[in-house]
Amino acid sequence: MTPGENKDRTFADVAAGLDMPLQEAMLTQRAVRRVLPDPVDDDIVLRCIELALKAPTGSNGQNWEFVVVKDRAVKEKLGSQYARAWKLYGGLGRAYATRKRPEMEKVLRAVEWQVENFADIPVLVVCCLRGNKLPLVPLPPIAESSYYGSIYPSVQNLLLAARGMGLGASLITLPLWSTTAARSILHLPLSVNPCCIVPLGWPRGRYGSTTRKPVRDVTHLDRYGNRAWRE
Amino acid sequence: MTPGENKDRTFADVAAGLDMPLQEAMLTQRAVRRVLPDPVDDDIVLRCIELALKAPTGSNGQNWEFVVVKDRAVKEKLGSQYARAWKLYGGLGRAYATRKRPEMEKVLRAVEWQVENFADIPVLVVCCLRGNKLPLVPLPPIAESSYYGSIYPSVQNLLLAARGMGLGASLITLPLWSTTAARSILHLPLSVNPCCIVPLGWPRGRYGSTTRKPVRDVTHLDRYGNRAWRE
Image 1 (spheres, rainbow over the protein chains, first blue to last red):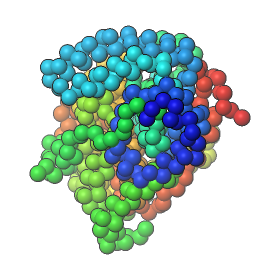
Image 2: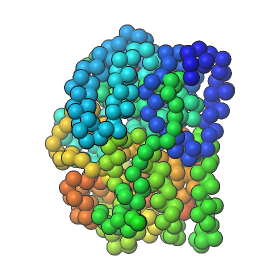
Image 3: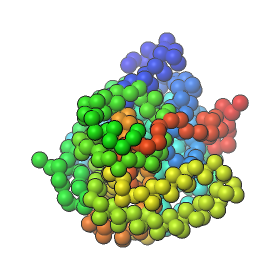
Image 4: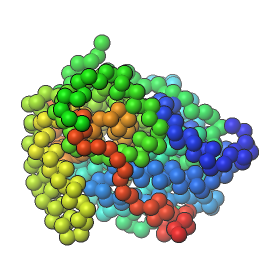
């Protein structure tokens, strides 16, 4: 897409994309990090979140909260956090990719673009969970898993809804590396934990298929290691 | 559905359901816990997992593993774990629901059915992550979130694919309450963490809409507490 092209599209036009066949949406979902600065209508963002709410939630707790960030000052503060975390982890990632996974170079460049242009992305959806998870107090692993199992299914619905409507989206956590900083920037009470961010905007890039290992390589029958379906 | 009714359905018939409109799948997804003991073809289960693999994975790590349990002896062992955890947590849940959330009674009865009939459910998909998360060693909250953010989007794809194909499914963690027991039952090495189970079977119940809070009640603009869209 090119800048301005999205101005003439009505909500009804865009929302019609939600009738895309389920498997087409899944098969063509990928992280679209390079997006245009053009605004995205609130109606479109709210529809994505509304569909997110249809995902499973542990014990029907519905303890999710979504902070939609459009204010440039707030985006800049989150962007500084992202840049700081990226300086450390991106450097490590690059060193690793150069040695072992050259195909990651393209992803790293897209993330770099996102870090540098973070405040120009029209909408950031910060996905949070209410609940008394105290930082650095360990829980049994399965309690942790249940906790995050109440937000990420909804995040995936949000990403698929964005895909359906042709909106670029990705799933990131690095800007939230310091929970303390994120809480302060977003005015989150201690009882609300920021889990991830989904940046949204009209794509510069395009959706398309991803490369994944064959299903028979990651599937085991009855016990781990029994790769019954591997050819 | 009634027992036996599924025998005449071919893979092509069932897989055609994956072309259901994306939003219809999301809007009619719900936990379907009561399922028939009729077998589910491996092709159908593998197709669900194949679509699960299309979800985002942190740094393209694809560090997921899926153990498909069909052996009755293994299902019985997991079922004993479920019953043990349910005795404790279900009791607590029931006491709470009776006092504060009478609408949960129906959910509790469905879970109870699942606990009692666990070994009769034709397929259990145990969703796992490889990675060096040590039990009881605390990580910064966002590292934990990133970790589970690499499995639950794929679990949601699995659930939506099941929905599309008309297969009953739900998302549970209680049978994995003791990670040590789960590891031993499933022969998981220490480097593989069981995260949740998706039981699959042809539904006795039916799919249909869920009740959720309005989107405007869980959405905030720019900072937490600024409910800009609340009417």
